[in-house]
Image 1: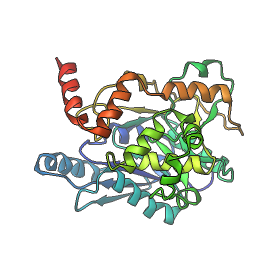
Image 2: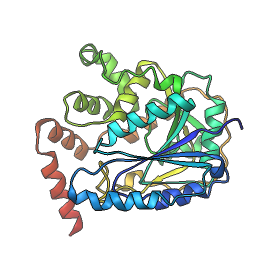
Image 3: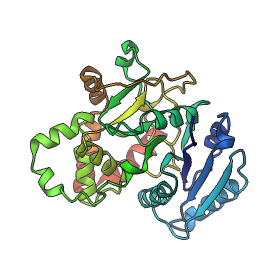
Image 4: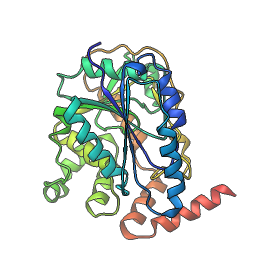
Length: 309
């Protein structure tokens, strides 16, 4: 294995204790450089949690070097990630990106670094995913990795040459939204993709991930997924910035099974299965309409209250 990728953690109100413990269980963590970006608090209510996070991260060890960036103001998740990755990837050329609500396998860093080295010259691969959804079709799939036309932000990695060509402003939006064929192709990764991008362009959401995903589509690229998930998301709680309603659909068991890397090509049957898994449910469609036309936050609070009863 050549030089190890720099690891980036983005945090806000949640103390990333479980994530750090799981990373330190990786044999090569002590050889890895870690950057932690602690976002500034939005208000006095969040201040106490942010200060607790900063107290915790100042005592982290078990890595080659720990660098802490404390934001003096609240950037928000999207800006914090975009600025952080852009700054670090210019210096190191490749990054592994994590958020504070994740837990990783004991070989997560090994898998990520090996995949970054193995696929670095394959420009068809846009990023490496650590999380993999529990697709039933994977049970009969005979390889350890597969390609999907959708990025995943729950533990992932990429290279400088992919990151630097991204158009974060989506300058071709007006042209794209008028092309039914382009929208259909973009939605090969799930029919929620166009709707999320639309909400982004309308200013209804602030997502770096959907813009990252759209640029992958524009370049005809894919994300490489492991058959066995190396990441679990624990962020469906009150501390989550976006995912704060529990959803068992995305639950997986973390696998420590060795991933065999090999050159793979898009599998139409698997991509169809992947798309069906990500397609919007009835309730998600309603959520999209509420976001677009108003009432989403009120509806989310009501649902949350009903689930707590």
